[in-house]
Amino acid sequence: MTIKPKTRLTFISDENLPGAFGHGIALLMEGVEQEHSLNAAAKRMGMAYSKAWRIVKEAEAQLGYELLARDGARGSTLTPEGKQALATYRSIQQEMNELLCRRAHELELGHDR
Image 1 (cartoon, rainbow, N blue to C red):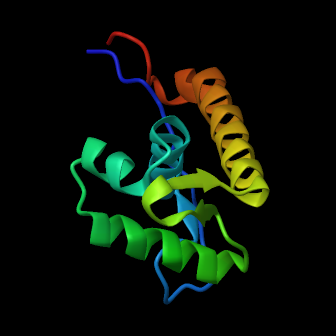
Image 2: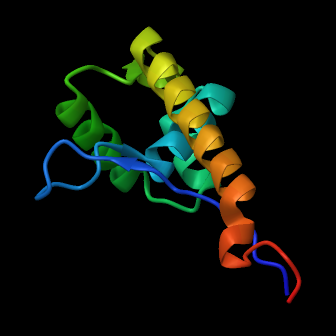
């Protein structure tokens, strides 16, 4: 069996709060980027709209800026800050995954045993 190392980063602002920005919010934001709708992005993930809304609001509160611009019935788009946050998150995640792949042999991970 081959084990493929991967990371799932979560940035936190307070140890007692849920993550400020992580895998789930990144997936929601990518969905909004494609669907232009938080509701459609949530449905695509099998998530209730109310949960998606809560996740976004919690992340925005912790980060101190809006991730999504909401336009009522017209849907949602990423704010410039939201786009930057998503791009930065994905870039850091990719760098971490590349590092893990380079170092995995030290634990004999990623290779057939």
